[in-house]
Image (tube, rainbow, N blue to C red):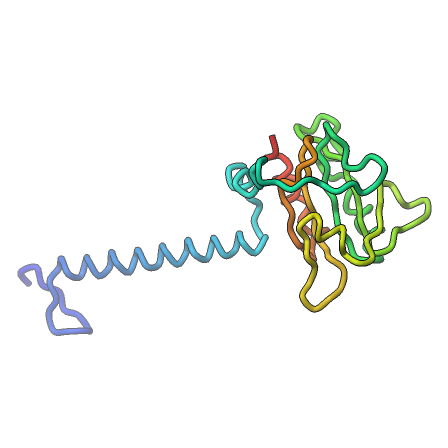
Length: 190
């Protein structure tokens, strides 16, 4: 066949042209796979790698100052995760926190203080974290969490460094399912 291949696209195609076509098709498939993986990660389904988590942090010079939630929260010298929850989510939040790495292991590399902010402050013996209320969403906006466009309370979290700078903030309506992501980003905070 003298280096020629029979093709459905034409009667005879050179071997080098066929190989080039296969190589281009392979690159297109590989590029699509990378795009799908990036989209999958952007959707929150995969944990960020340590280097990705470091890149997600706001640089210290550009980070806004954290707003005080209570008398001493967040506190200088401590990393803090400020969770913004919908009313009624606090009991599920407490259940989800049990056994969560940054709290459960006192030897964790980067332990963190935890604060829960809800539209209306929960009360009772089940309150195990510092809590605050933010009925208008003003506090959430100060942390960089605007809330859903269709209304409702802002739901998400902010990570505050030991110098009281908000280094990361995001809206996340499924926050209770993403505590491993919170831990990964917290771990990247120097």
